[in-house]
Length: 167
Image (cartoon, rainbow, N blue to C red; front, side):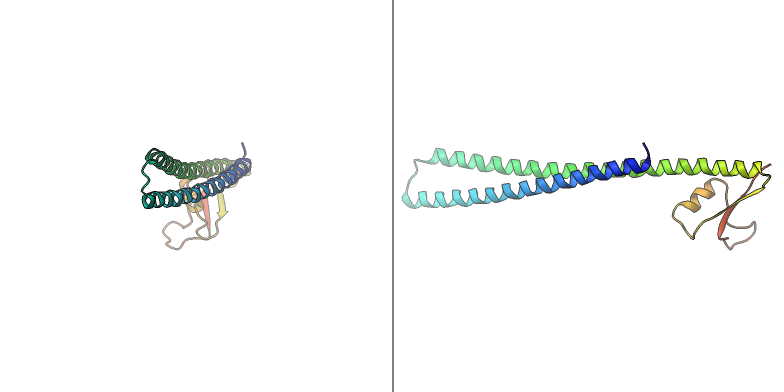
């Protein structure tokens, strides 16, 4: 799978996750609003029953309390599912980025080997590669592959990396 195709699929997946997260957030808010409404209704009913002196409805009150606690539990489950989705999205994105970077590094190694072989074939003795400033990880990459950007004994870095090739 090419890096751009994988990246496009990952971006589509992340958009779907974001949409689902927003949907679940809206559901969570609706449930919380309904729960608040039920709480208010229960408190009003309790106050009214207390004012009347009615105690016959204690079974119904227990049921209402059970329903309220169940709604709170469902709300907690929704919150945990949202956290889980966000964690999964972060892990997917991290693994996708790592896979793309590893593929790019492998491609660069192959290209570098091909360039060195072509320079040797043409009778060249040195490969020179321009690198813009600190250009991210490029200096580390070239140093790992035997290139340098200073002349022997010099302290001032050159504006390019080079490697002398063995015949």
